[in-house]
Length: 343
Image (cartoon, rainbow, N blue to C red):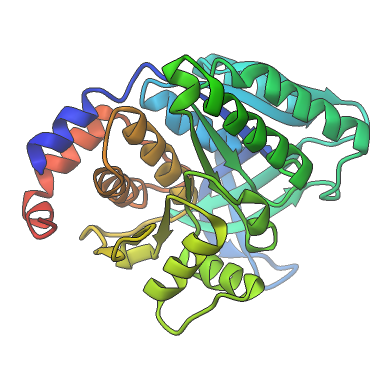
């Protein structure tokens, strides 16, 4: 398997992926906590440096760019300094921001984290209501459909902030499937549809190629859809059938992940043996690497194994981290014994 995975890693770059989702700005305040505040029983963090980067769906974009894939952005920001900063950072990464809509009446979602000694001390969120006006929803759907024809894959990065509404998702999915059934181009016929969705909106992603929930989300979604079972394997199988999915990749933190393919026995992939520092953004890395691997010609199992390795790499780093082809190649070489057990 090692040689095959290395071959795939060398072929990840070059595709275009449409990333529709909830874009936000992640701000990090790095410093030291050396005393307790006299005003309240909380640490005082003395800030030494600040850092900002795209978060939410923007973290998917970061991961895709690191793998050499061109992302096309569809999302919403406010007409504020944070929205401008987010757009600039996405463009610096190499993303196409034609579909990023700036709206006067909305505030850009910002998550600010204070980190001291490698530990997150506090997070402050600035965000509006998770509901979009009908006119804006229609505009988002239109932008998505305009960009769809040049995409090899679509990722719905749903952070439950309102952008991935049923109307937007179904219009994109239905349009993609309608074009695929009659298209002469390989791009349209083979377009992948992937999603990282919350349980409450799971049902609107019916017919996708793959969904990548974590274990809690998968069980909650199954309960909401009336297909819950005692074992995670059976829950995954029932979800696949109910949702007409080709596969589910269910992440399980340190326990790795479970690959569930339609009409195949579920395949557990044990966690990669690493020291975990921060799981923030690991789900974004998983869906990005799965997408890139499938576009490179990987089987579902090969894509899941690469994503599992990638997840093991990013959780060793503090903050929303990314992986590139070199990271994955080193990870494959470092985990020869682990990979040998997956044969």
